[in-house]
Length: 147
Ligand code: HEC
Image (cartoon, rainbow, N blue to C red; front, top):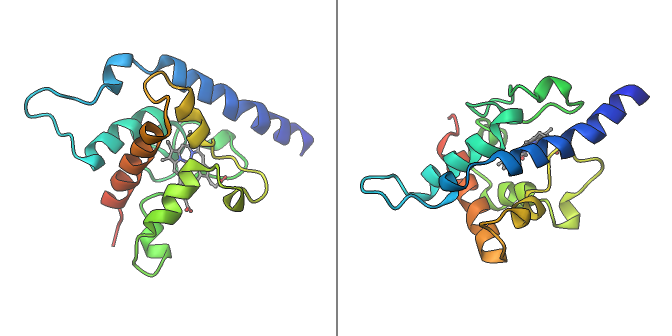
């Protein structure tokens, strides 16, 4: 068990650093090009591909390439409403992505604390930018719920 734990503890931060440093700057600028889909869910989808798909999978079903290395499997994000009596808990999902509120930080978290991580990226230095990005992600996740 000690072996597994140590892998888990050094894996997540190094993935995070890799994700944050390899993300192309151009893709982070909100698309201003004609016809580009700039709805919140579409922007969130872009962020999801860059930051979340490695663990949660391209289709958000919890089967990303990194998933097998994690002790706690990444959540299937298409089933959140189903697990919540058919209602999408927008604020709860927002807080679990942000991860900075102590109330949510129960026990060992395998999910990166995105509220802190996004603050480290070049384009999101302030709180409003961080909130926007998380808000977009939640809109995207809301858009992929299975009934
Ligand atoms: C390093 C792997 C990893 C990455 C990258 C990752 N997650 Fe997670 N995520 C997890 C794991 C593991 C869980 C299961 C619960 C836990 O450990 O906290 C989880 C849980 C969640 C939950 C909670 C679902 C619920 O039951 O309420 C949400 C929402 C979520 N992730 C969204 C995201 C989003 C959005 C991103 C990208 C910004 C992301 N995750 C990136 C590993 C990851």
